[in-house]
Image 1 (cartoon, protein in one colour):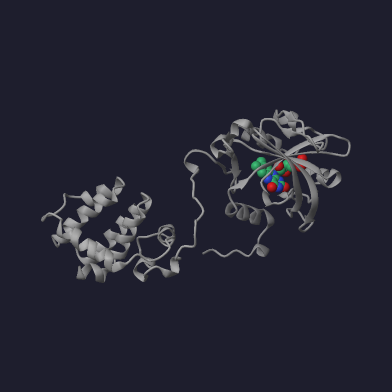
Image 2 (cartoon, rainbow, N blue to C red; image 1 turned 90 degrees about the horizontal axis):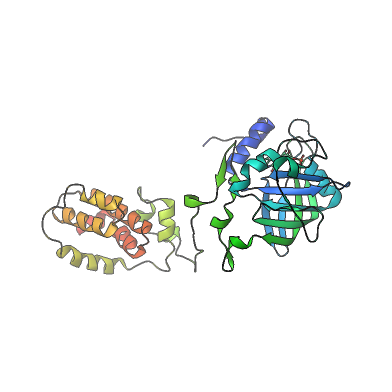
Length: 330
Ligand SMILES: Cc1cc2nc3c(=O)[nH]c(=O)nc-3n(C[C@H](O)[C@H](O)[C@H](O)COP(=O)(O)O)c2cc1C
């Protein structure tokens, strides 16, 4: 691992390193007004939610890296204690990039970036009508984390109103595909939360046995990944290895003599058929074509494919049987 001590590097370097690892970051398009009622709009990816009761967000307009002066957004929130945050969808990304330019104080970036003002109910700054998700916020407190070029100002705001586009809902729930939000990565990279980038992972319904309780030959597998192990470790109790062995002895007895076709195992695995891959493997195993260590590895590959296809029962059976000693004695 490359170890970096931030104290030994210039701030812009530290900034880039920090932002590459803390990614993707949601983007807040923050609308504020100065004491004279002039509008300001800028994007900030030092942004997140930090509680739901009350709903709290934090946005951090840093001191400018080049001269250490405060950003207009910081001054406006400090002075008026009000702001709105509009989430950024893919359809808005070029416009928010434009709004991030360092315009003079008093220049309205709604105008510059071509956005429309969405009237707020309880704060003065408007939201952005093009955004599918807008929050009206009141400053609770702010924390200056250094006062130097590049140091942050944590503007902690309570959310007083949400404005959410009707079409973002699928029944009672907001569907992320309908929001199509973008996030900021390191350097000039962005990320779009849509298509293949989205996946669902339900929370565990109960405490699993844990990776530490997996048999050693499974835990130390060179085939199974950390994600595979976590999936296996999510069960309530270890399956009975003797019962699995007895069942497999019967299975093996039913396998026709002979070898599987060339590459059949690999083809079945590649096409996501772990049960058929296992049949092919059993044939070669029974025909004495493979050394036990090789069978053990192939069984773990079957376990992995079974995990990927959602067949945890088969995954566990293959993983349990994949001990080289068990294979040799089988
Ligand atoms: C996607 C994106 C995210 C940004 N995030 C931040 C941030 O978290 N903090 C920050 O100080 N500047 C950030 N910036 C730069 C500000 O938007 C930029 O400095 C802007 O001019 C500030 O405007 P203001 O002085 O009107 O507040 C970001 C720019 C972009 C394009």
